[in-house]
Image (cartoon, rainbow, N blue to C red; front, side):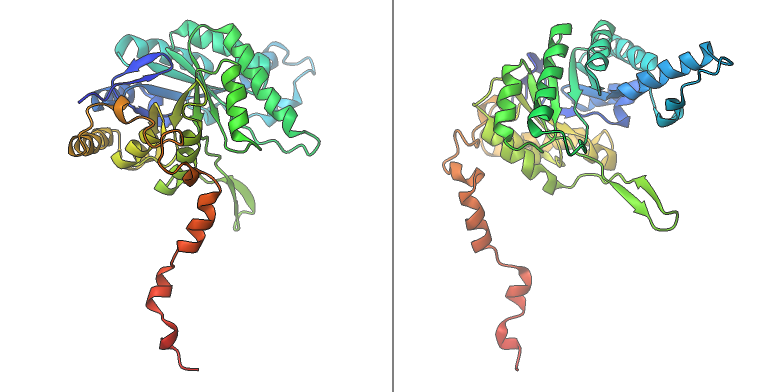
Amino acid sequence: MDLTTNYLGLRLRSPLVPSASPMSGEIDNILWMEDAGAGAVVLPSLFEEQLSLESYELHHHLTYGTESFPESLTYFPEHQDFRLGPEEYLNLIQKTREKVKIPIIASLNGSSLDGWTEYARMIEQAGATALELNTYSVHTDPELTSEQIEQSYINMLKVVKASVQIPVAIKLSPYFTNMANMAKRLDDAGADALVLFNRFYQPDINLETLEVEPHVLLSTPQAMRLPLRWIAILYGRINAHLAATSGIHNGHDVLKMLMAGANITMLCSVLLRHGIEHIKYIEQEIRQWMEKHEYESVEQLQGSMSQKHCPNPSAFERAQYMRALQTYQPDWGRVYEPSHYHG
């Protein structure tokens, strides 16, 4: 049974790829992921704020006592808030490439064109097999138009592609007016893959301290429906490969994503809950299902239930919305019949 798949021009031994998380920031964990059957590993994101913070701290030490200490330093997180600094990140790439055989995909989160390109080059020089651009930003300026926001993504992708030779994927949020159009524009701009979708971790309010604080909620299987739908719609319409992320918790979730058209499926919350060894159980579920249904390879089933090949393509569009609402029966409606009430 052949589980190999193509992604970013690379031949992976499996479609199971641990995504960026604290787990992939340790070499021992990456070795464990490789042993468990991962096809590749995405390292944690390196944030441009780390580079800016390091630059400001250097400036502070060089100008100490000259009354030129930059007040804006207070807007940056403390060094201890980052697990890996810039130098440590590049060292992680180098040492990991020396010890593992599977592809190592670096992840970069920038906020300016200079920030994206400068460190993209360094990441390539450190030996990363590929680069994932993590576009994690929330636009709050009411004067900023959707056209301006979308063009900034295109510009960023183009300058990064022009500065490196390794394959480049871009990890997106689903919040675009026309996701299909945005996917095509990114494809035309040279994206080697689209990673669908980024999950934004929403803040919470602590009622005791009256402070806004981060609140990380791990994904549930329900979160996979959104990337499943869009991967099925985009499959065959763009040249870029498609990576599925969010809500993938078992082998059946992986199979659905592959059938929708994904080249790979990314794992995060499930590994945080159950450990790295769980990759083996997910692969076992995939193999058992494929054997039962007489599939010989991942490529044989990939895209078989996309909108392009689905017997009912409208299931991915609006027509299915009305049908879903009209056919749904709540559990309480089957338990509490009107005849149970008298008056």
